[in-house]
Amino acid sequence: MAELTEEQIRTALAAIAVPTRDGDIISLGMIAGIVIKDGNVGFSIEIQPAEQDALEATRRKCEDVVRALPGVVSATAVLTAEKAPGNAPQAAPSGPPPATGIPGVDSIIAIASGKGGVGKSTVTVNLALGLAARGMRIGILDADIYGPSQPRMLGLGGRPHSPDGKVIDPMEGYGIKCMSMGFLVEEDSPMIWRGPMVQGALEQMMRDVRWGTLDVMVVDMPPGTGDAQLTMAQRVPLAGAVIVSTPQDIALLDARKGLNMFRKVDVPVLGIVENMSYYVCPKCGDRAEIFGHGGARDCAQSMGVDFLGEIPLDLAIRETSDQGRPIVVSQPDSPQAKAFTEIAAKVAEKLTDAAPKAPRIIVE
Image 1 (cartoon, one colour):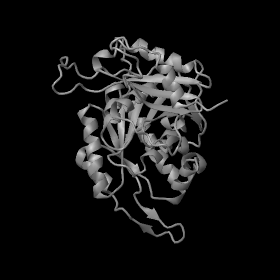
Image 2 (tube, helix red, strand yellow):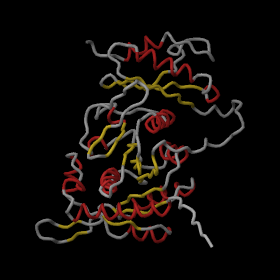
Image 3 (spheres, rainbow, N blue to C red):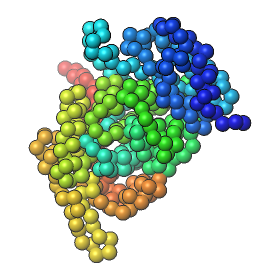
């Protein structure tokens, strides 16, 4: 069977008329960001904010038309709306839509960093496995659309299955359910998506995936304080955020920005993790603080949040992550793994303390 092409998809979509405009969805230039992988097709439909309700049926038609093409396993379309130009009339602002939970998911926590390169994804996967080791049902949402790492971290390949072309079953590794854009695009393929497209993709990875029952969904956030962070903070009720930083001042400056962003959107900060905190030579045992030491602890104290722990800069952590065998499962008795599991225990305790308590009934 010939390989499915973007041209075939665009030809099929050219038959879809747009009820709010004069023309079809292709000639009007509304289709963008087409992604094809192993028969799974994803794309965005660029609309004006006021068209969202009117074009929901058109979005479904687009999915149906593409799904009917030979070789297509699933088709996912998202509506993405840009803000109207400054001189265009706009409706009165109504604020962001209310946050709504994901059915079956008890708690959602974000693992975030102010900048890239601090080992946030490594902390995410090992923290998730540390929570799972405590008997909790865990899922990972890889929200880093531009640089998804969790498929490699969990040693997962292939593509997710869609039983009906509408919802996707997450992949699973080491008992952890996972959904990532990395399952839908080639590993070395760049994601050239604008903010609204990222927001739409995150919405669908949250809402159109059959997560089942989870005690905790751990979200691997992209670095920075952009669209993905705001989407997560505003669209789902986050139980808290964990900030990951290295000890040096430049990383801590960005960590503070990330922490303050979550505070501004009323997301509790569970604490700060200092990654690459120190290095111990495996041959001589000498300890070196390559990036400094204790900066994250001092930052936590100054900003009034908990310090969750230190993770060493260690070759075994890097190698096991790259090999898809995270150290918490491949070397569970090692000091490095225990550093992660101790942090997981603190996070689990915070989630338990934050859970609504049943009322006490006193009979006199």
